[in-house]
Image 1 (cartoon, rainbow, N blue to C red):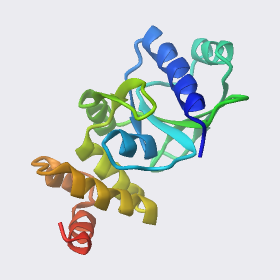
Image 2: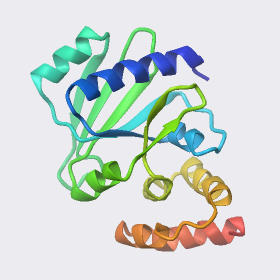
Image 3: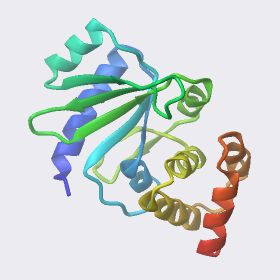
Image 4: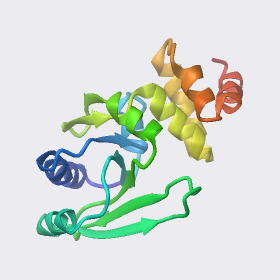
Length: 180
């Protein structure tokens, strides 16, 4: 598990860069699961952000000690544009670039939460996090979904959001297997 200070430092530096540039962003992935109250060990940071490659952004990232690598997928790729960040002392950070309207909607619904590490940061809404985890569909993702469903209570928008992303049946399967 990564040391507490490394997460805080990396997130604080990246958050400052995004805020200086007016970039909408939100935490997703394992740290977001933890922010919503489900204990979760993770080795990296995953973010969703409304950004695109630019020399100015690359320069700002470099100035704060990040090495940036832009990865482009095909238009039908689940992640058409990804920014992978590395630093000497911090965790790896994957920034999924919001290239579709529904991803930007998720950003607009993000909620500022205090992470277990103490930093306050925008986090995707719990319904959106569950949908993203269902879309990823790995065993750890589905375990996260089951855990989040047990902790969350009623989520009136969840089925509508899951249906919109094509994962409603998987949501129902996870609920059934978890007894929710």
